Length: 306
Image (cartoon, rainbow, N blue to C red; front, side, top):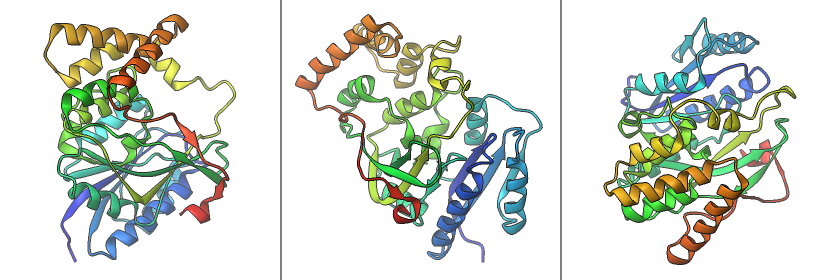
């Protein structure tokens, strides 16, 4: 039976042999839940020139589930370019990107899409987040963190400048056209720029009926911190990219926001301290978009969570 497809699941992969089987199994379980509701998904796995066993693992799953679309690249491009190409190719109303080392709950896709459909002013829906800080794939902690952005765009703009930092929610369900309208892949920290561009259209919405386990993958000891590497790159600076995607008027507003963003992402202790002081002043005048990032104890096994 051919069903209307409204949601595409995208899994970008680069050298994820340690985690990929578990990721794809969780996606298949959530797909079956979706199918049981007489709905069908588009699932695309894109292998970005992996040099480990990721390609073999993907091939094994493609034989079991031939309706999954597999993209194999013979060369490796930057993660941002890879992400952007997959977004541009999406044809469905909604899109969800799942990391090649993360896990989703049984009804993840259905509940996120359903919540977003019932929240017409929101561009993105995310669920509860858990984090496996050790990257062992055994136990994880619940993250006590979510964004509460204002429905008023002028307040939401300043909330995003001061508080948007954790980008895990980019792996929720998103309205495709809004994501495609944002040019972020040439910027220093692209996932944050994509989120800023989405916030222009409305606040994020959450549901506690969908769970996402985020891994901190075990990497080689000499693996560079990706955020530091991005912020010292020659790509479009954050203060330019963020203001470009928000595209709000006002010379003085943009100038003030520009310096706040510079201080926010600065590696200078003095500049970052100035940002913290300004954020405290702002929190007295307007409601903060979130509180500090906290994890709850005790840890739970993956089976307990999912």
